[in-house]
Image 1 (cartoon, rainbow, N blue to C red):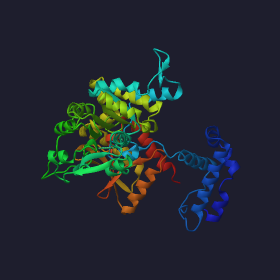
Image 2 (cartoon, rainbow, N blue to C red):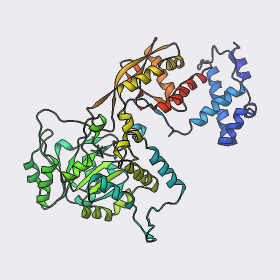
Image 3 (cartoon, rainbow, N blue to C red):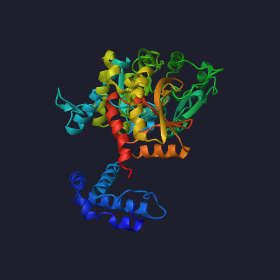
Length: 473
Ligand SMILES: *Cc1c(COP(=O)(O)O)cnc(C)c1O
């Protein structure tokens, strides 16, 4: 091993690296300027490792070759785009921080076509006159939910905001104290109500709300009665709530609409797919709510969107609210939504076509077999400082859907032979890969729950693990 000073002198010059075949390929892809900058940065980083405080270069067999430096530059250029695909092995299927639902192939193709070509977004091809953006999904949503009419906005938070603003601006919105939810990412029902311009009238208590509580609160200033599906928590024990059917009758008698915010909402009975039951949108409509709101990218398995289905007259009023224009969705998402909803017309093939449902309905036996298949390949790539075992674990649905309902699954469990900090270092290095691998740490082990690793993704997963070794001198 040469001393640091000699090694520093042996680092290749920028022009030498630029002349390599690897660098030429980078210039082709990223341009000369960006490639040169990345090579300079890679060389700078390497020099740091030779400084006394850096020290990690001690023990190197040889100085990095021009190709090595080009390789480092390639990885720097790859990581420049931060919104890049990751492996979600956290065990949370609808992980809000990792982008929730993955789209079905049909939805992806529809979105790409809409990006590439003009589409009849607000154009009636029959008459050659102006059409309506919502028309593309209106009839599908009516068919799938049994509602009279439907509209779609940016997300469910927007759907709730828009309903409140349309019917309870400078009026009162009545809601149970047991349903004043907070959803991750700063969605708090009282704050949304305030921003919608509604006066929030809380009724009942945290654990018990009765029909009389609602009746007593209704008056000439009431604009809306709100029911919220407590999607991410349960109140158990000495409890009472007023069911949607009874509440709809109370609201109807007072001449105000009942709005039911389902949150995730599902268009099919999930118990058919081995999951616990979540209220379906069709049920909520049938129970008499005049408006029902739900998300596009939770259990429904589509792109981010918020749906409002319900009475035609009320949807018409919502569409005339100027805020609707500010909350509308673009053609790309609309194309993906239409294609996703279309899949629901063929329930038999839904679980094989909709990635969210496919991941949620995988059996623990199937995932266990996959873990056994990958264990030794993983152990080889992780190195001798760790043991890799197959462990039973539980996956979560995520996004607040069915919070108490976990799914039996299997994980690759990694434990360090040495200190715990070695495990943190490993987890960090896997998050720095060009396609990062994100797991979770539990009881001193790094767990990779394989529920969300599609069989077809296994080669890419193993390739990503190998890349980690390539960066080590
Ligand atoms: C998730 C959720 C929302 C917010 O929906 P987004 O689509 O994330 O905006 C609102 N209400 C309930 C009950 C929810 O579960």
